[in-house]
Image 1 (spheres, one colour):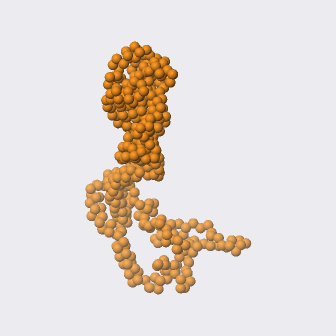
Image 2: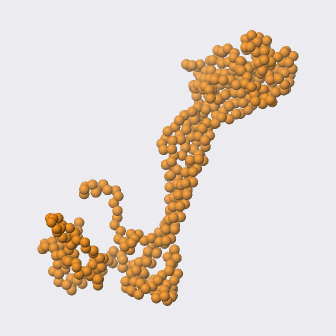
Length: 468
């Protein structure tokens, strides 16, 4: 057992009590300040927990620019592009009376093109907007070095409806006059690009739309290049440990337009077109790291605020030391001046004496303070360890001069006998019902219990405290 004691990290220091009822001196002011400080700390903790649980504590977000030599991006969750027009008559994308047909196809590598697939129009909910054309389930591949899987870009051709579309794609064109009238109007193609952003408050990826438009002019066809920027999103939202999950999102796009001649377009397509659009992945992207506040970090923040608030306790400690000195001086004065015990003191929470009475008569406060202060320093010196040792040594020398040394040594052999009796019809021993009063330990007690027996230990033994 003695060996195990060496490892005990919870040992306590013995502090001599000033008063038998309390180990530490405490004041009403200290209690009030303690309640205020801990209430403020608890309120701040509850406030931070509320912000944290409601997602109002924003995470730490860092962005890093990067480049990709190879990347595959399937557009299964978002629509890369939506195409529509504002109506000025018939719906130009209606396949029963068609003016413009949009074909989607892939460019694989440098010079490989897949077959043309007409984009099916989706009915609009608005009477002011045409049907919407949305390329579905496309996949883009970035591979500028063309090593392994070749790059894959998406292209859209805006073709003027041709009579051959009926047999190939079951698309019926409007009359030639209606198509010419349509081409001579001032109008434009409208584009919606769907992008993704991370909402840190909701902890989810949200979709947004950005819009651009291109004017329709048969004599000045257009060619548009849309480059999607990919962001690698790393989200660490574990409340205890570092643990991230990754997603790739289309965070932005770059738009490039250039004029192109009808003569060049006729060499590229087997039908008349108003322009073309190319969609591809940008080799420049970014890495976004989102790190949410851990519960340990939040508690550390609360702890730092609490520590700052508790620094005010230094002031209270100083006041408590002053109050303790005042209390000690009064208690010790009452030992030398017993009449002080008949004084009644009224103090405020700061320990300031507001009223003194002696047998229901007022005592001048200022005069008492002068009296107390004149003796305070000498009184407080009384309780120092050096002074106590000094005075005990004087008592020791006095006793040695007044009492024979053998008598003093004999005192180490006396104590109060424990009332142990023998139980009837048994060999066991029992303690009798005997109440020991506090006065029995008091040297000057007038109420000493005569029933107490004294015990003298055998020769060669004493009951003094062992020195270790």
